[in-house]
Image (cartoon, rainbow, N blue to C red; front, side):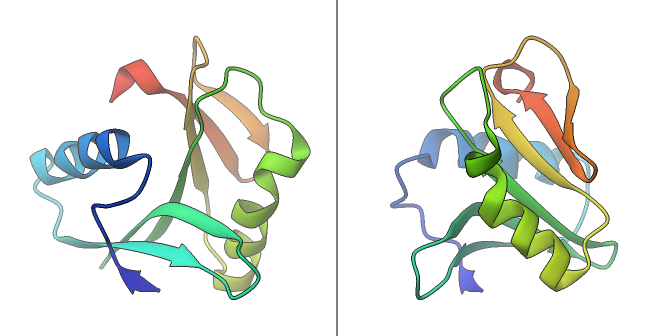
Length: 106
């Protein structure tokens, strides 16, 4: 994992998420993840409590292909859950271990 870079295209949303985690008092390190094949996760929060991968999408409807990198990361790192922050109206399960979070809740 690479140190988080603020030059990403989703920088505003990533920064909002980081600020939200900072307000909880959680001590964490933010990362950006990209494989050599180009799969990426927009934000990884790593703390003493574990690893939380977060993908940010600008769409309301999420399809299986949108979840592929996140699902692979969750499996490889044995994460209990991952988030997709997108333009949904309510919190919803997108997959067994992937929770959709409304972008306006950041």
